[in-house]
Length: 112
Length: 115
Image (tube, rainbow over all chains, first blue to last red; front, side, top):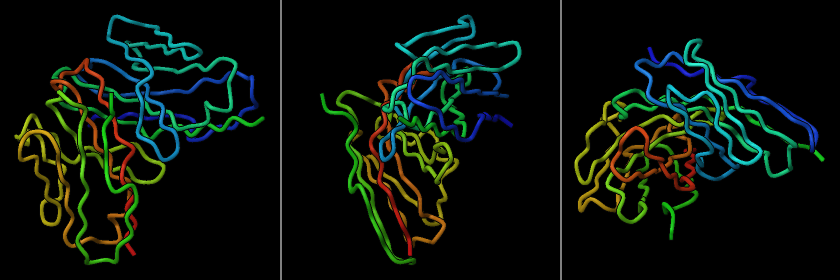
């Protein structure tokens, strides 16, 4: 069964600090992995996308990594800001592209 | 350019009542998705349309849920009758052709509370 597990479920950090969110998946065959940011009361917004051959992708202060061998991904947030408070969802797509498996998300709270 | 539009944003109903959600995707996007998101969880696909054809509705509880996309643009998702367990956020998303590498753009969702 295709699954995406994220950890931690929730995280509280101080403004300015860095943090790393984890994603493990068992989706096969693998096509790509995305990280989405979902602000409270809003729909998810795509941050990064990585294919099998990519092992790192940056978007501003967000850096995603992918290890296709161990089927793990991480999202590193540098110099956190209050506006980073949101849920971060890991989404893995299969080769056909018609099946997305969503993780449960990590709820991040950045405190001043 | 307008994003995915959904209405209403919030809906409170009593159990056994019907409810409908509306979605207008990004202009030119052929593929439309309806998801359900329970509190603290990731979205779960209910149905996917390519133009007006429902190409994946395997997760749609067909005894009470129905959806349509008559002209291949706007879509409506209906629940009749609603149950307490249907309380969730219903998200609509769209993409150009539904291919793996395309970004899905999500609407703000409709938050449903069934009392």
